Amino acid sequence: MNIPEKIPFLSILIFVTTLYGSYKGIVSNKFIDKYLLSSEGVLFRKQYYRIISSAFVHADWPHLIFNMASFALFAFDFEKEQGILKLLLVYFSSVIGGSIFGLINNQRNPDYQAVGASGGISGLVFASILSSSPFSIILYIPLAIEIPDWVYAYLFLSISYIGMQMKKGNIGHDAHLGGAIVGIIFITLLSYENVGQRYLLALGLSGFNILLICHYFYRKGFNGFDIGRIFKKIKERRISVRQEAIVLDLDKILDQVYKHGQESLSERDRRRLEEISKEI
Image 1 (tube, rainbow, N blue to C red):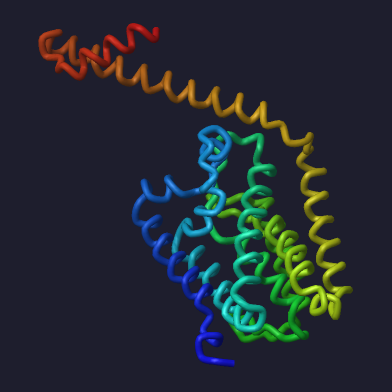
Image 2 (image 1 turned 90 degrees about the vertical axis):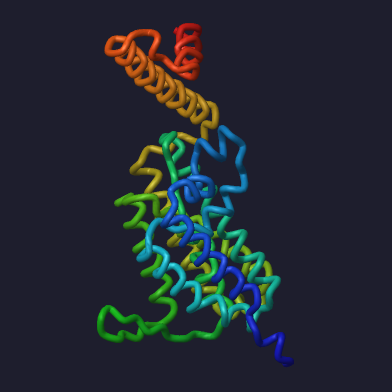
């Protein structure tokens, strides 16, 4: 194997790009708002790039560190063993799968937003485990604990399910389950012989993942994916926000007129007052 084949170029590129994008997002709300996953952005504004771009921004430093540590733990070795093409297909298909699952899971919430590489990393974790010989993973919590890879996989799914129930912040916990099932499917198609050696684990993880998803939707009361209802809720929210902005602007202008007279209004205030009068 020559030197270039030993260097995980794509893994390094994804790692560095995610660090940079996340740093920009953490220090700038405007930046993160532009690239995060949101129901309004994807479904209403047709900004489909958010399905992938949300994987390159994170909510905070702990979120970023945890995800990048998980990425480094699996991605570099996976690319060296399976190649750049398989990493490309597994990672980004899992990102897309996780994002779509998040949108479906939160279709009743027009304000849904999520960030993070959870879907891609989840798919990568399961693809790595299923395409490799059995190995152990050392966890520092805080003492070093060595556990088999299959135990780690089941713990990963269980913790992700708990995170879905808690729903804290904009972290896309539900993307873990969506990304996991996509990762399992793609690595099975791409490395059938390797996965075939661990087919019992593949079947077990797939079944457990599907069971968690079904149980979650059963408790939640899932009635199908109604995109019309989503559009209606988003439109209602946008109208409500616009009406609030009109009230605030009108109050500000009238307050200025009351204190300083109509002559004190700027040209901009006069235009805004005229716009409001047409909308009321």
